[in-house]
Image (tube, rainbow, N blue to C red; front, side):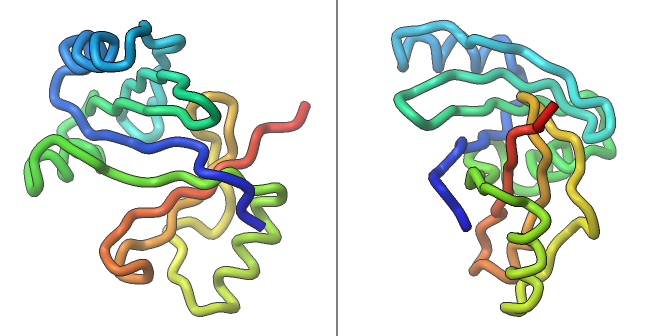
Length: 135
């Protein structure tokens, strides 16, 4: 079951410039910068109430963010939902006919296990499932 909007992801060309813009907009600095080598991105996170804003900058020309920016330019990339049990949610969504981009949850930024739903299953919106990693 989806509990809440966990974060909104924005593809940016220059994370430092975007971080400064969002810091001015939100009245606060990013609380975390993190690299996710497997995805070829550097991320910056802001906390806004219960929801986060994630800025994503490509670190490789073959990354999904690089391809997204080349095709669509900077902007809204995905919406992420916090889920209680990511494996159960993946099973439920497959049974409902959604096309998942991963067979198993992957390690993501901000101490999360993640899975993306293909945008053709959700009317053009890239959806991410996030579950807090349990130690």
